[in-house]
Length: 293
Ligand code: HXC
Ligand code: NAP
Image 1 (cartoon, rainbow, N blue to C red):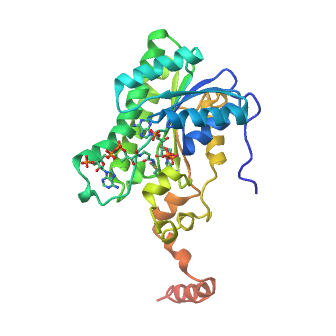
Image 2: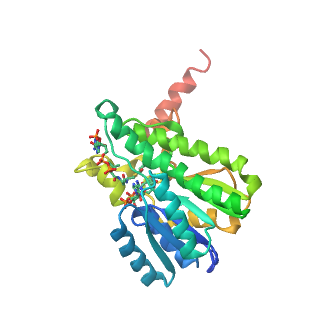
Image 3: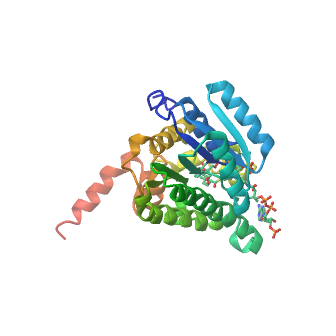
């Protein structure tokens, strides 16, 4: 099976102007590339302008699309306002906000300083809130409709997860914001959805979540029923669909794309997968024998 096939038809995002936070690397970059291939203009934004410029140039050369690099720390509302104005100035208008920027690292929670916890909450929750408020208010004030916000969360937004507690706390907040505003701002013609990815290898995430030989000790593919990690194009296909007009009736949804990973951890008897095939005859016999006793 080819997991790298592109799903949408050519020009599916023609005339869409998209802002991708954290678009200079990892999944943000992969989604941006596909948006450009589908005819969108994209502004990528993060703290590191040099990285953004390099990515924008690389993606323009690869796709023939138009990609703008705008510096912005999403934790700072004034910077977000400036970034929004610059994106509008460069692209004419903005139709889609993709809240993808994040910070994360593994740590026992008792080792975290108050500032360490805040840092993650500020990037993930406050950053998504800052961008949503800046772009949302602008759309509402101008009476512009047919806008959409896509938030990247995680599957532990609803299960929680040990050792990444600030991230889990913040992503849960982003999910609540997604579902709340999907209802409240529908009247302004703004849709809200979220994607909860399972493991999709990126340097940013793997350096902070699986440093050193943890990568080999904890092979995340083994936690996934489909026994593999995700391909970036698979996520990009879903994101492109959700921000496109094909998804005009999708609102308030969170779509999990994780090969079944989180459910495997949740189902009480899923651990029976470890029972060898040849043991099942014996087990069945033992259960049947008890029937009439
Ligand atoms: C404990 C740590 C720490 C660590 C930093 N801190 N790293 N504490 N263990 N490993 C503490 C610092 O000491 C400081 O607290 C506070 O956190 C802020 O650190 P700074 O380095 O000053 O922050 P900053 O420069 O803003 O960098 C933010 C960052 C960094 C989050 C720490 O890693 C970053 O820039 N990350 C961006 C990219 C990223 O994280 N990508 C991964 C997303 S993956 P004190 O008290 O000393 O001042 C993801 C996927 C989830 O979300 C699901 C995967 C399956
Ligand atoms: P990544 O490459 O590290 O992406 C994070 C991006 O956020 C970087 O480009 C970073 O750019 C930007 N960023 C961080 N702090 C910022 C700030 N204060 N202001 C603006 N931008 C900031 O990691 P990734 O794996 O692609 O993650 C992308 C998204 O997917 C995140 O929301 C993550 O939680 C989510 N996710 C990833 C996985 C996975 O398996 N990879 C799984 C579930 C969810 P700068 O450093 O230049 O600022």
